[in-house]
Image (cartoon, rainbow, N blue to C red; front, side, top):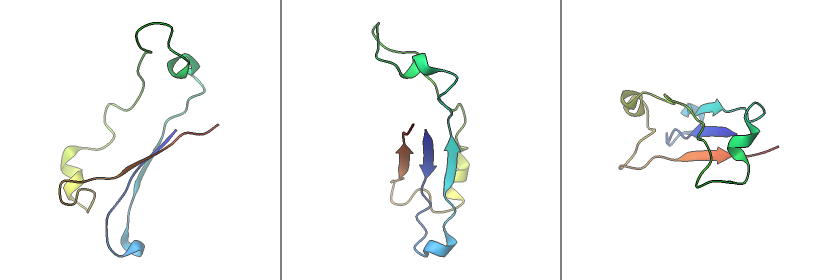
Length: 72
């Protein structure tokens, strides 16, 4: 899985998106069909510090864009 926090700079050349990869290979049971109420979670404890959202234009008008790609 790939998570991309989109930098909303108007000039596309100035954008600095934040990309984090989450390898799925080591924990296939976390992404299988649930056999109980829910599967065990998986993710990042600290994707980005809250203060860093304001260093660039990641947060504009109380809106941020997080792109999630799931692939083989």
